[in-house]
Amino acid sequence: MTEQMSVEPIFTIGAPRSGTSIMNWAIGQHPNIQVMPETAWIVDYITGAFSAFKRGSERGRFSHLSNVDYPLGEFLAHVASSINAIVGDAYEKRCKSLYGDYRAKGITINPSNPNSPFQVRRSAEEPKNRWIDSTPLNTHFAWALAQVFPKAKFIHNLRQPNDVALSLENFDAVGATAKPLEEGLAIWMQHTEDAWLAEKALGSERVFRLRFDRIEHEPELLIHELLNFLDEPFSPACLEPLSTTTNSSKVDGKRAGLISRISQIHRYKKASRLFRSLNTPVSASDRTQAVEILKERFETHLQQQ
Image (tube, rainbow, N blue to C red):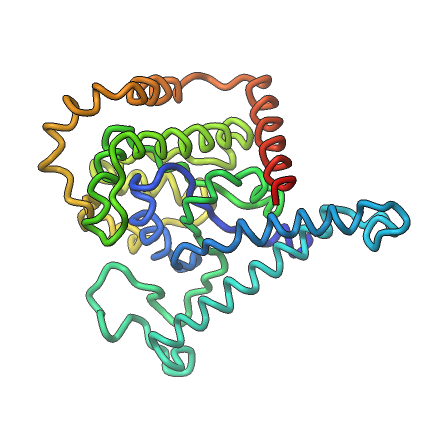
C-alpha cells in the first residue's frame, strides 16, 4: 500500500451554515480523528500541484516529468503525503500550545476549559491518525480532492435553503459578514449543486449525506451511522458537542417572518426545486456525466490560474 492510500482524510462539503462547524467538532472528538480550524490552503496546494505536474510534462522528452513518463498517480501520492505531514505537524503544535509537553505529562483534557465538550484531544494516548476539514471551498473541488486522496471520504451537510439564507442574513451575530437573502440563496445553490455533483460522481461509498435536522432530532443514530460510514468504532464523546445549540446566528425567533419575504425572490423557487430534486435516484449515466462535469470544471479552473 502506498503512503497516499494510507491517508484517509474527511472533508465536509455543502453550504455554510448547515451544521458544518458543529459536526466538525463532533467528529473531531473521536480518538482517531483530529479536529482543526478550516485549512483554506489545501485546495490551493492541490491546484498548484496539478498545474505543476502539467508544466513538468508539457514538452515530452524535454520536460522533467514526461522525460521519464512520471505517473500522475505517483506525483499525487507525494502531494497527499506532504499535506498529511503538514496537517499532522500543525495539529501537534496546536496540542503543545494547549497542553505543553502533554505526551510526557499525560494530560488528558484542556486544563483551561476541562468541562467543554469541544476538546482538541481527550487523552495523550489517542492515535488521531485521521483529520477532518470543513473548509467551505472544498465543496467546489471534491473531485480533485478525491484524486489526491483515493481513500478520502466526504460528508455532505444539507440544510433547507430558506434556513441557510436566513442564517447567512444574520451571520454578523457570529462575527462574520451578513449576506442579503438573495446572496444567501445563491451561496446555497452554488454549494449544493456542487455537493450533489460530488455525490453522484463519487457515490454513496464515499459521500455521506447529513441532513441538518438529524443533528437535533436523532444525534446518536446519526453519529452511529456516520462513524460506521467512516469505518471507525462508535465513540460517545462525539455526541457531546451536539448537546449544545446549533443556532449560533440566533435565527429561530426570526423564522416566522422569513417565508413571506423569501417567497418573493425568484431564486428561492429555483433553490426549492433543487432541494426537492436531491432525492432523485442516480443512474450510471448520471454518475458518468457528473464525473465529466467536475473534471471539466477543474480543468477550466487550472487554465485560469
